Length: 329
Image: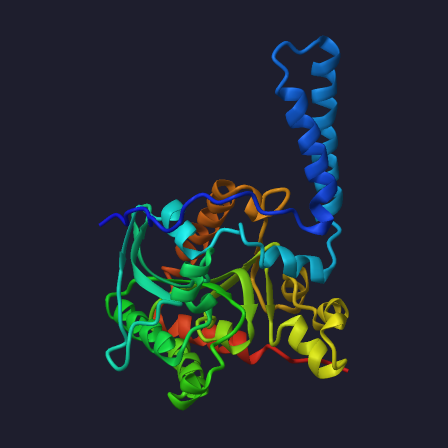
């Protein structure tokens, strides 16, 4: 069945631009003023054309030269498309599945059957939320043990029916609370890693925003792993790294550079297979264009994996992760 629009996902006031976006927003404000004139002159039309060219040039100049900390800010942008946005933009149908059959339904982890055009899949995703109510319900995308138990149970069901699995990763990390630790947070993540490595069906994973620590890796074992251009995938957040190594969060930009966690770095290291380009200015500026690029990537990767046998999938998955971290002197 089609998923009805979520009444909580309503329009809100514009988000203030990030510091490095301000020159672009100032030019766009000038362009809006010129375009609002009721009877523009030839000089006004020429100024509008020049401003449009300048805005495109400025966007390209800024977004092709971002440092790692600025990439983190884009990955966390409050207007960046999240799992529920992609459900509406990518899939013709989505039927959510609930519960882990042990403790409760963890809303930070979404799972359900969907159709990507004619291809039936299982969709698993972490969802942060936008306003305070939605973020509280989804625990800011930080899953509890029952979230990973739910995700794995649905994946095992998909494998029985030979349905490809698509995982969207977007979390600062697994929930570190006492209750989560008491219920076996570390064990459930480790168990998910082992069991996902053995699933007899194609798995496609995409980091759409933040890929934080074991919380991200818990649904990140795949045959094809990709990242959006301005996402990051890391063993620790830059703030956490700065607190450990420099004893103060003010060194977060230095930590971000040292961690080498951007999409370009991880593609170079062989951690991810593909970097999916974002619209000029970031995914938060054009949700539909981002969804279109993401959909093409998903279709292409699923199509390439479907002909492989179960044995081939598992062997490729095993070799992929065994090769990570190798080095030569």
